[in-house]
Length: 389
Ligand code: PLP
Image (cartoon, rainbow, N blue to C red; front, side):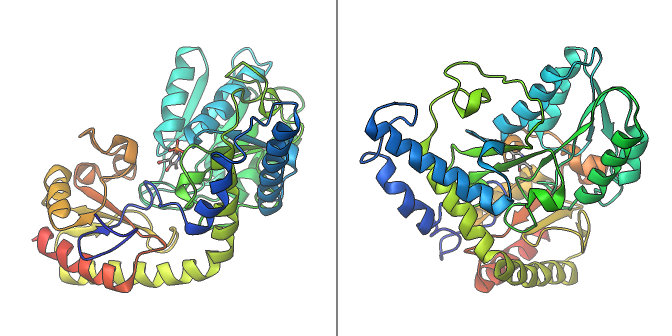
């Protein structure tokens, strides 16, 4: 159909949904499908060889995010990591009525888990965002209570790309902990899935207690993700079995995917600076040309404080159900927002939350990536401008 990003046939502008596996990641994975296929939990020599490879991948990721090997739990997807963080913290807490704080624009992995936890008696506060999709540390401060066990705020929103003040939020939580004589110890989890390609994911700099990253959003394979858990944080497993991942995530580790994940993370950090400025230029060009050449098309979210690959546009006189097939027809592959929801024609909760109810069914997310060229953007823009008329 297209060659990882753009050929004459089609232009892939949905890198926030998933990315192709990079050549480097593919190459390092190769031996672990059949040559070194062993189970890292097997005690024989080949098994221990696989264990060594797993340890090396864990260490490599730890070096990048500045965590120790003990603080990294491998899972199969960010959805699993998020479930483990939210459910696992609640389960491990000694609170009779645990309270969670989150925002009303989180990915469904967070929101659906919170709603499910509410059914089990957990109290959840959904902080409202402003018109650009931000929450403030002040809002978190006001919402923190004696029984707050967890604050979970996405670092970057997957639909509109806005970047939350994670460091300031962490500082507020720390102050709350210090001021508190008794009660729960509020922890902070950030869903960094859409941040890992572009922003600082060093856990010491961020100060977070828990952080989620997914391999398939950073040019690694599907089937691998991680939950960073600061040493000392009490977490209960939600999957029981053979006690892999120090008991936090039972099930045989997906060695090829984890090796590819570690390599992809390394590569994305090496390319970060260059890609950030290259994509920022493309993003600026994209937004300017669209706004200059169309009427009734508006940018959702912040102009400045967003990751450089995200362009979320509201087409005031066209709905998503009309736009997506027209874009497909023109060979422009984008989405209505969250990939998991894009087949369900329901309004975007994120666009509604920023006060643009009329745009909730009229929004397209274009997300650029490593293979997006100037030519791709120019060609896509011509198509989008035509379709918007
Ligand atoms: N969180 C965010 C912000 C995402 O964008 C996604 C994927 O779209 C997820 C979580 C879920 O990731 P995964 O597909 O690895 O479960």
